Length: 418
Image 1 (tube, rainbow, N blue to C red):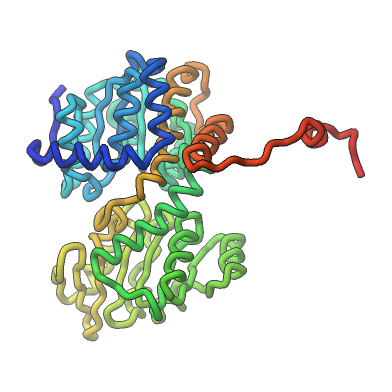
Image 2 (image 1 turned 60 degrees about the vertical axis):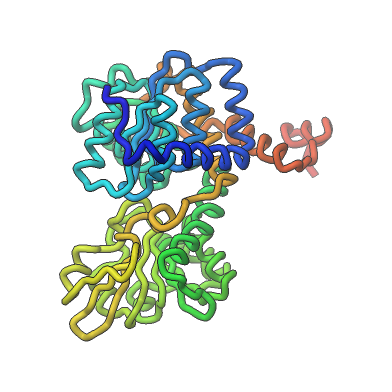
């Protein structure tokens, strides 16, 4: 294998310091790392990870390495790699194929290089590695015990594969663990999306109208934090139960066609395609901002925006102005890619501590049980989810109530009634 493809190995020392900073804020993962170092449950297991290459991810990778795994890591988004982190991991001898600013060819070439490791376990954030294996590298399938998927978009893709009978190895939907979804999607995306928008534009939220596309956990997190900064929040949602929840949470709920003329800032967080499209661009007010915090850059129909524009100008890093025929200006942030990673640091370490604790324990579960699992998408075993929550509470110094024997018996018996 080619050892590594990174931007600049001179950045390794800076990356090491930042990885250590994040480690101090990830106590759950650190406790798992110590357990792995003692028990070596991944001895001889080859892992290919297609994840956002950040300081938090680095601590997951080092935890797996401590457990005995051989690892190749590549980026899951062309703009999310932190080059100093990639260099630091490469300096430790890991196989790293990631640099910020990849074009599409370079992006998929890096995944291909990582797959030269011939993985037993795959880790994904968006399912690109799994998709490539099934389409172009099927010769690897016989050696793969299973995989993990980190994000909503990837889980949707994998469930579609499973429904079509196309999925050829078991995958754990780490995204769906309560301790991941609640922390990562709501608290992490909510805060880091604001961070990315503020970094790119210095946008004043107070008094502005913010249109949130999607009211899943990510949309809930962003809506609550935008409102906390004084914004008037509109929610656009297609699922009636989520739309009802948004209305009961105090937000205005309406179709995008009605919200389009009202919004100062539009943020998509759905996992679907063309949430913002030509019919909406034609209705938006002058100087509206367009951002995406969903995994892929398809939630905003950028080709349609390009076709409508008479000119396109880069105003500053992560801000491109599209001039419409009638003189209105629309601003696309971070090329429509994940704004929280393209223009900011992504989720805080305390948040990713939960996500990556689930990842690490799920990798161990696959290594120990993969051969007996069906070719399907699995939830994170509830005992892992609860253990992660308990470890986090311990790290926070929080003690919770315990059931008395009488209470336990009552909850597990049908004999006791009113």
